[in-house]
Length: 371
Image 1 (tube, rainbow, N blue to C red):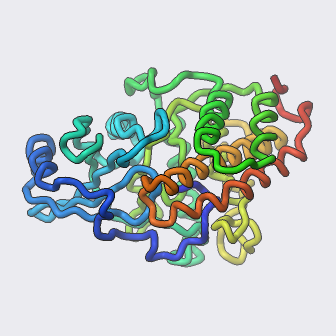
Image 2 (cartoon, rainbow, N blue to C red; image 1 turned 30 degrees about the vertical axis):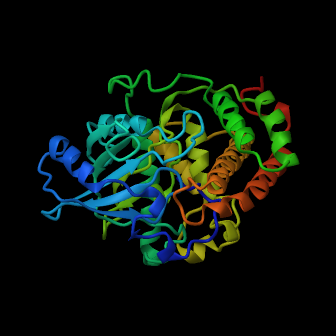
Image 3 (tube, helix red, strand yellow; image 1 turned 90 degrees about the vertical axis):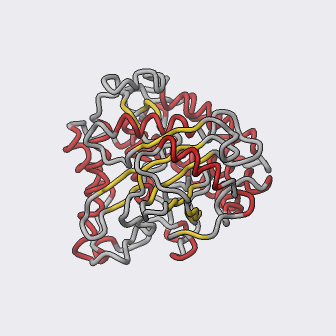
């Protein structure tokens, strides 16, 4: 799992495609052959295994069987893990449920919670043969086609938030209400569990955010890390074939997820964000344009400006917590991304940006009232 907007600028080949499986992430391929032969229709042994370069959380592999069919395997990483993290069983459950909706998701084939097969729990899903667009500037897309790419990801988000999660059997996939409060508590605890230095802005956010929660409390199914490079686009069309990386999906707040996606416009260009770029020249939409587009599609009111700023500060805080966790895994050798150690450099600046947003918000200014 990488984090929207707050990352070192991508250098293409380092994150796109596959590589030989890292030594620490290898497993018994013949054991996997036996499992897939029993649980994946049409599979023909033996399997060829490659590891995807991108991603920082659950090691992810491209599988090719003897007939040339391709699959994806996602597993828990080896080693000591933070509580409730790397829940591949939850990923599998939500993908399998969404296979029955108009939300584009890879076909879910099989879940294995028996550690004896490949060493940790894993699941197998369809390989979506399309494009993963890592760079939000979309250099590989003609200027006149970039707006359609952005609209597709916001339109797909509106589809997700319209899903009747109870009808899909996901009423117990999370707790309705108080999503932001629970997220602040959860990520704050995980931040403290991985803390490597004192960051004043983080300590201030840990105190301020719970004391200034907005009153709105809508509940929808949320992805949790919804962004451009967590979706596979059609090879030539501005169409999403599949949303991937559902590790932290749950029942949550649609504005929290929308603002997370829009955080891209607030983060500097040297973090991989859009701030500082001439969007009109590049053929890219503005933050306001896409917020309005989503709200029109989802039939939601455009959020009050002060409320929107709270969500921005909250998301940057959350990013800092997650980045710290990735950095902690890099220090103990369990992170799957080769450059996960660089996450540590971005924890402080993301927290300080969040606190600078808080400085412009008064308690009375939060729409709906604070509590």
